[in-house]
Each structure stands twice: as structure tokens, then as C-alpha cells.
Length: 114
Image (cartoon, rainbow, N blue to C red; front, side, top):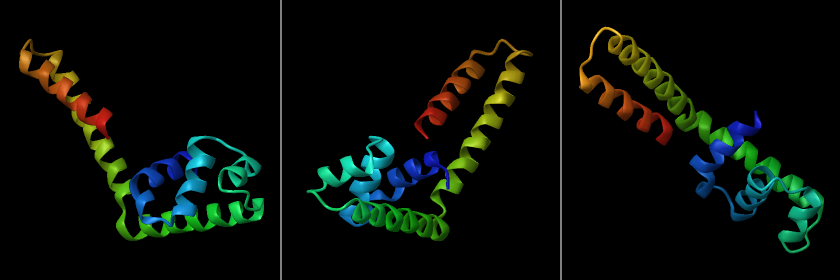
């Protein structure tokens, strides 16, 4: 799984992980800390314990996504919004209706909120 996928999955499902897993993943992927730095932040545990927490956390995130599918749905919705925005842009070239500008703006806000 890609780094960006883990970051997004951590945002979606992070609260469902054990604290040590969530903290280790957050420090690794969001703060970009080394294993040694994470071990120090987690009270001086071994780097092997950090690796274990990260691997178990990644595995749990993948299991949750497999069962619940929120990331897949998020990507699907993002694609649909992009298609709708493109249709609105195409319609704007044929019309001067201000409502199309407002609709385009709303779709952009929704897309950025995802």
C-alpha cells in the first residue's frame, strides 16, 4: 500500500487502532520520524517494537478498509465530482448563466473538503 493511502486510512480509521499503533503510524507517516526517533518518543521502546506496531497498524488499516471501503468510496465520489465539474465547465462555455459559476464553485468546495 502506498504512503498516501496509509495517511488517508489513518485519518479515516485511526481512532479504531490501539494507541501504540496509531501513535507509531502518525509519527512515521505524518511526522516522518525515524524508527529510533519514534522509539524515543514512545518511552524508549525498542525499534523492533516500533516496527511491530507499525506493521500491525498497517495490517489493521487494510483490514478495516477491506471491510468498510471508505477510502474506495471517497475516491469514487472524488471522481464523480470531477466529472460533474467538467460538465459544468463545458456548459459555462455555452451559457452566461451565473448559476453555473456558483455550481462550479460549490463542486470545488465539496471536492476540496474530501
